[in-house]
Length: 186
Image (cartoon, rainbow, N blue to C red; front, top):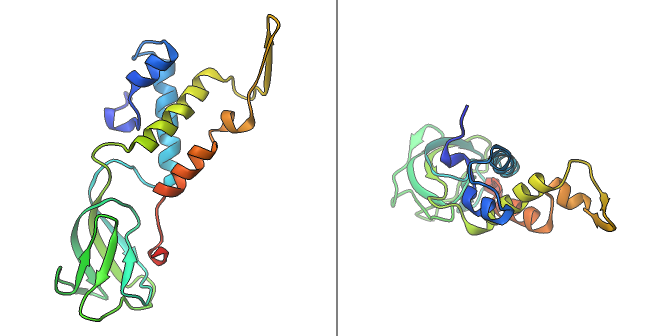
């Protein structure tokens, strides 16, 4: 099937310009799609906007807990042990994905006690994500799989395992920053 534009976490035109290739080069598009899928897999979510997702969360015995994915763009429902709570009376939320109890109350320290329907994701892919996805796609496009060292015409090039695997320091930090969070991470 043909990829939809939302599947790429970076602009194919940027990668094409960097590699001196056409934007519709199948190998280039595959490298970009692969890098985007890899990033999504490692962070555990789609990155792009999700209109409504319902998640079941554990309480943490504290006033605040984190929704798994940020930025949060809306909270449609919060149901605590079968009781629907009211925004600005029972809870409030922030774009950072913080869900806070109001009225000097805390979330119960109980497993699977909370169901939250919320919207999340980036309308525009953040630059740090686009950058590491472009780097990974470029490496996939230019570095033959499994190559550590290559000599041609008196020139020698060595690629480290990090470049070949996509686990550069920038990639690792970006994945950690955008990964799904546990409610207890507050």
